[in-house]
Image 1: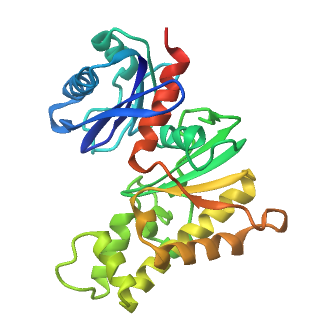
Image 2: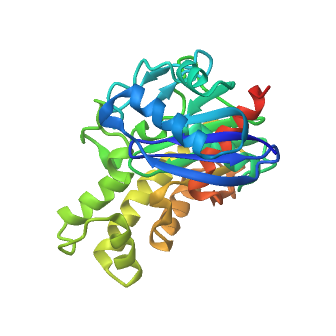
Length: 301
């Protein structure tokens, strides 16, 4: 059966899956990202994962970390998680390696496309996705299409100013952005800074502690969620989407995180937007693969 390979390229792993024309995900192959070996090695690893799927692949759709030019197919910029990734001809390089048409976009945009195709936002006309993990990313879909902006940089939701982050340096070189207080690493660091339990190395441990009644853990999660919720509410006031989706690893932190997030979003909304649905994604780690495959189907021969 004809399929498209949907690929999610991250700093630590590459996931590739066979996706049917109706969005059904089949076999998935996951391999480590050889980031330290440079872009050529990463492209080779992607091609190897796609070949390992062993299907009738008629095109590939790629969702990658970084600012991706979907028209030119080039990585415009990227963080140190993928050294040398900026400037990589992502589409051209993979088209040469795979011998099939290739479509590319940012991984958060791919995540949003997946949720809008077969996930929590299916059937919605305008979708705002906020993905909260190592950083805070975003994507706006209008009539099923990604809004990329004039420089392919739209969606950097983590770089909205936040009073809770005032004066704190951000990874982008600026200061005072919501990512500084709401990302996974920021929440874990804040918990430890305030005297959290020794031996806590993962945010999931903080979430478990909050669920077990740890007041400090709950307070830290609530603080980050509140700041993020204010930012999301502000974005919603500007964009007026049909639905807001919240995904990423931090969104798995349970009620101690979700309740203050939803309360903060609602408190910021203008009267016409009150009651705006703010929902978790339903596709989990498959979302970016499925969304990338949707792009691939659009260019399939």
